[in-house]
Image (cartoon, rainbow, N blue to C red; front, side, top):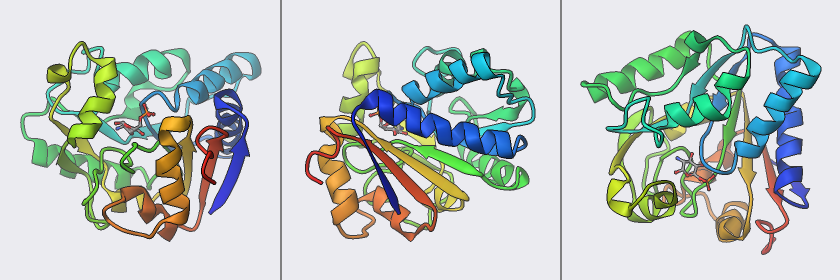
Length: 241
Ligand code: GLP
């Protein structure tokens, strides 16, 4: 595991953005694994800026997202579909049909999980997976206690995850109780992983990740089994390290 120390959120985003652009330029057909939340926003801004200024093209690239809330349509401003369109896809030349996000509004959710897992396989797997981390160590929406062997599945969101994400909703009650997420095993299949960690509210989680044990009670610790992980963290998140 490689740890890149940065001064602040902007520098963290820049370092991650440069790596992604490098991979897209050397392999224009790649499949990017993308994440939502406040952490990757700066990286997405960098990719948009770089696309406009330097012409990095995404016409042959594909993307798969980690997760989606159950019960929100793609048009719902709090859905991850909406987030990705607004914050990234609309601003790049990526083909909309090449961007994939689990369908949280599917009628048959178990089937949707199987479809999504198969889709990733059909794409040849994820070349570069971008990840954030929850304060409880979750990756995607894999909450503490998730089996490391898990594939795309339905989860009941932890109360502290719903509370943390309620900042995007009008009230806690509006935060969905369930989500679809790629599993830990699905994530570990990615050829390369970039984990971004920013801010003091993630300092404890980062410390646990770097210095703690590998345990299903701390989902991100599974990344220690992966051979090509780069953690890019800012000073505030590195407070205890
Ligand atoms: C969310 C997402 C995760 C994300 C994490 C951290 O619930 N499902 O993919 O990494 O929580 O979010 P943030 O970057 O806003 O701190």
